[in-house]
Length: 182
Image 1 (tube, rainbow, N blue to C red):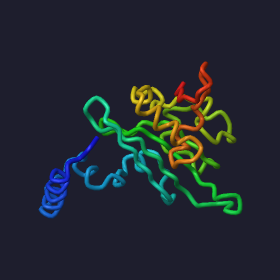
Image 2 (cartoon, rainbow, N blue to C red):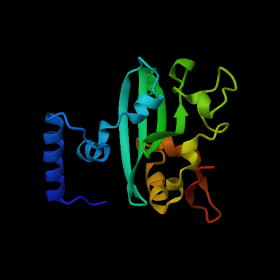
Image 3 (cartoon, one colour):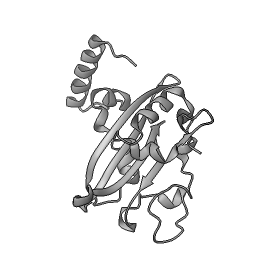
Image 4 (cartoon, rainbow, N blue to C red):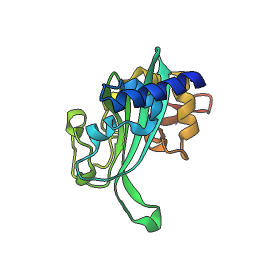
């Protein structure tokens, strides 16, 4: 999606003018001005009291609406000699809701809020949603689009969204890595 410069300037002016007058600001307008401002996934899944370390957002134009894939890294950074481990949650934000896509956590304290709504806790040693859980984000039709497949392939192993897509990359019959959500 390309945004015209004049449109962006008008949008920013409208946003700050509405905000300063106490008028409600549409969420789409807010995200155009501040794409990292999304707290929906944080509010839905990050346990209370745990600090948010990083938040990454990728926008997709899907069926004439903006759909966001969000990665949140949260909790205290530990074991930094081996690369600082934290908890991760990935979600798809669409229709004003946040749909869990993937979660990785190192303790029950870091287990995402609302986790039990989607995934059965098999043991106290469960540390991620894969492979025993099919959270609702894995069913979102965005994941079947070519645009998402290209994005997933680019992020695999190196981008901030590697946490969201890494477990679902598989080699197809032609020997190419592809994203397979299920």
